[in-house]
Image 1 (cartoon, rainbow, N blue to C red):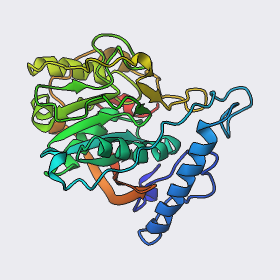
Image 2 (image 1 turned 180 degrees about the vertical axis):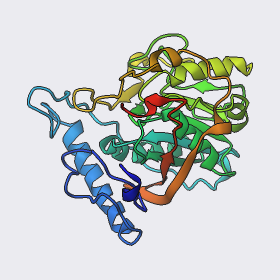
Image 3 (image 1 turned 90 degrees about the vertical axis):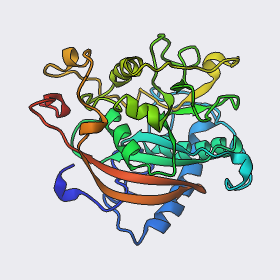
Image 4 (image 1 turned 30 degrees about the horizontal axis):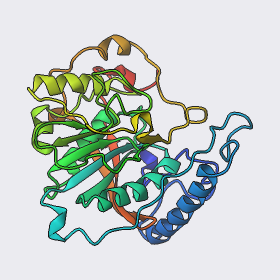
Length: 323
């Protein structure tokens, strides 16, 4: 998407066949309230269609759709979070995002209710990359950290396609060090011992000690492995859940690789470079612009959408664009 098409609100690109034709390429501020209502309705409709019954998902080719899975039940909301029982800390839930609206429509209301039921003060930030470069999860998290405000004191680096099913999972303030909620013995896909992706909690102080994440990772993968080295280099210890007996059924993974391909291509010197530790870059040199900041409600759950334009020095990381 070129600079001439940068809109003033959340970009709706790609997406499901259910959304194509319904939503414009750019949105003005005026119809945002109507859009929020529309998104709420679509989210309920999509969940009904995609999470119940049998057969391929709507819009997929016959025989290629993933089997439908039962949706996690939505818990009723507890009292408002200004009660003393909610505790003093506030979580910034940072969700790197691009073109995965079906997952987002399920994620926001589910996580808002999950965290509210646990009395975790929180704010959900959707970090929507709207530039023309390849997806950069690590840089988006750096931006989310910098833009999350002083009223939050810890962060969750949270994938949009991973929903916690076990209410015993701890999303509380990780004072002792980084807390890996989606630990290898619980994550449905990744089981190696140095894995720290999916869902990772850190205090803001600890994230700054690591200088955030490297900005050199364009495309899918490897940024979490490099961040593990940063955690160790900062003298921090990764902590993980204990006493969880649900194993690989602890999370629901919403991603369907059959119809939403990941950008796993390695071009130029990318493969060799992404095995190296970035000792210079991170929070200190992430380059970006906030195109817009929009407060939305998805099925009654509040969130903030940051439309983010990342910048890339092609002399340093030529793999940020497809040649």
